[in-house]
Amino acid sequence: MELKKIALNDVHEALGAKMVPFAGYNMPVRYSSDIEEHNTVRNAVGIFDVSHMGEFMVRGPKALDLIQRVTSNDASKLADGKVQYSCLPNEEGGIVDDLLVYRLREEEYMLVVNASNIDKDWAWISKYNTAGVEMENVSDEVSLFAVQGPKAAEALQALTAIDLPNMTYYTFGKGEFAGVQDVIVSATGYTGAGGFEIYVKNEDAKQVFNAIMDAGKEYGIKPIGLGARDTLRLEMGFCLYGNDINDTTSPLEAGLGWITKFDKDFTNADNLKAQKEAGVSRKLVGFEMLERAIPRAHYEIVNAEGEKIGEVTSGTMSPSLSKGIGMGYVSKEYSKAGTELFIRVRNKDMKAQVVKLPFYKK
Image (cartoon, rainbow, N blue to C red; front, side, top):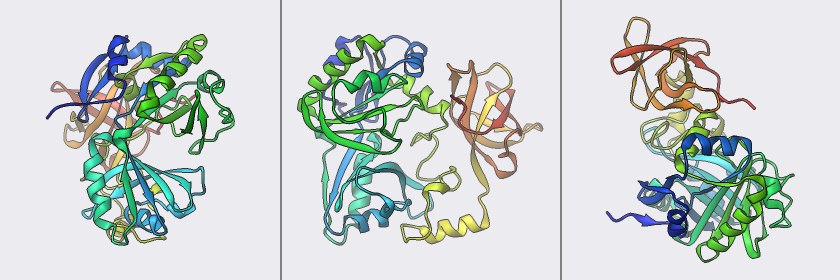
């Protein structure tokens, strides 16, 4: 299948990005080195082009009803300008996708979904759209930049009248940005370093990207690739769809009970409620290596006797902590913080321990 290209594909190539296939798109994985880019975001400011993400507009008097039906969180709690993290449960107890729900105004919402799941999610939500809710897939028309890091607000404030330093987590504003009207600017970062997401039409993407790079110059802004995005999100213990959550993982096993609200009816709610009452048999945990080793996805997690008790879903050498960290599903009895585990690295069992997330604490 031919790779899709994001609007600024050529800009990233000109900036020296190493481009790789990711979720069906040709995407920048790194420009310099993953560690250098990671530290730029932790200490200053960086810009990610994540235009591969999907955006669906959902409108009409029954829009909220549809969102309530297909998502696990309670979207009725949203007010204009608020964002919610949620997931789309499937009928078997797993997760179709995790997503963000933006309430633009009453009867109008934007759903932001993972690039690899755009078609799957669209089909899934459409299946439940029995009341004629207006749905529009604008994924191919929208570019998305994530400007992340402690200096993000200072770097961007000159470009907009939206009050960036006082924007609270999981809220957004809409207004002029870098001379472009009706830009959505939100604070839902995936790095733990603070910052903003900027949604623009593809035709305005280059103007906005260049303006951000210019405004951020004095703050040391650099373009950042998907490599550093992965180590940054993992240090925060944020789930990545396809790794830590998928069609077979329950939101309760994944520690997403907080976005699973049983005071409303949604897909598979009864089965998930029964699972909550009975207790899960496995849990997603964070662990850090006590020996020098890098855990990788699909490595076996074993106990002191060498018996398999789980599997690594995400792992890396943490640039901020200089040690191996990872997440994985383990049998419930091994899920408590402080529990000793072993990660089987090339047939050698390396000692690790379960820790409370996030790994990186500011």
